[in-house]
Image (cartoon, rainbow, N blue to C red; front, side, top):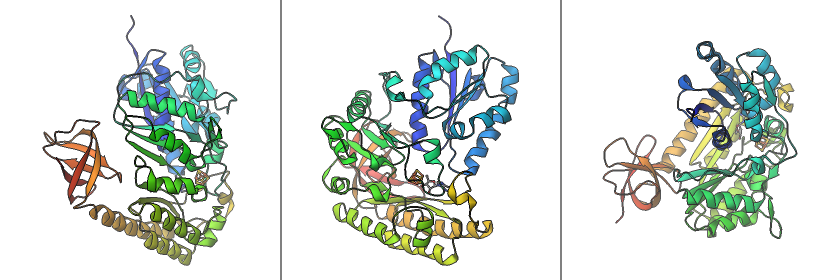
Length: 440
Ligand code: 5AD
Ligand code: SF4
């Protein structure tokens, strides 16, 4: 038997890319590839890329340049670009970087085995179709190997919202939901392999409307089906849009014990003028009222958000409205970005904010968000929480897991195994994590 070929995948961007990378590795496993952690001994390198901000895309080109030496040493090495930069700029990548053998978009990676064969025969291959067939059906069933206690599961892809700054509707295409029975089958497979927590993924996950036995199902209905899967202990989902936060989903946060008290609900900005120009179709007020309803259902829920500062035509007053909204909501965690012009999106044509001003706003917003994040984390001290243990710590006997609210928790002298969900009393709050002790 010949030695297995080695595949190095580097993943940029969101959790959907993490999920896609796993599926690509599994697919190429059928071609005799095993994963390696460094590009140095790889027979194939795949960069699974992100196009959301300019910097993310530029990183890909600089990373590709670094493989020049490797390719010179090993002419059979195949280099591929996958993900959203591949989708958006596939032909340009081929032109700009002759090292690249293969370009595959996020909707066509089930075709990787054929593409790999062609690349192996010396062809340059590009596939950025949005094919008719469902890639998840064409992909092999996931292997049965044991795996860690947490997993991502993509249930919905694409977006029809067309926020004025965002490339997702162009790179990932229109919104499509996977049928519920396939998702349940995949969840059961994951649980058999040791998974205890599943995060349902979608660019607009709460717009989920996949086929069920009696017509389309909502995300809440899907969550209730997953709730019945024995051995699955925790369910999360991300990313949601405020306008798709339906009553049954809000209610599930109060009644479904497996659904964790954590919600990533981006608002992007706090000024109604900017929200309108962003084409968000909600106001600051409607978002705040929504958060109130969610907190009425689940008072302790941790709210997470995304923000963009320096969106075209944002004034200091508009920015103040963002700070006011943040003060009012109180975020447990948040991601904030400086607006990045994306060619082809409507906002790219508008008057840009002075980059220095945008930097300054970003710093001010991040200072506020960091303070809130810290306060929420510190408020966990003294509480008894569920912790799902994911790995050993740096010190002997120490274990590390995640709380229901997704904070990292370190426990010393811990007899829990990886994959155990245990009750932990939180004793202190550090820079980026909590420390606790097992309860009985
Ligand atoms: N510039 C800056 N941030 C962006 N995001 C999306 N597009 C852009 C852009 N052009 C942010 C949004 C989104 C997150 C995934 O990335 O906040 O919620
Ligand atoms: Fe992009 Fe999210 Fe807006 Fe869709 S809802 S266009 S993915 S920011």
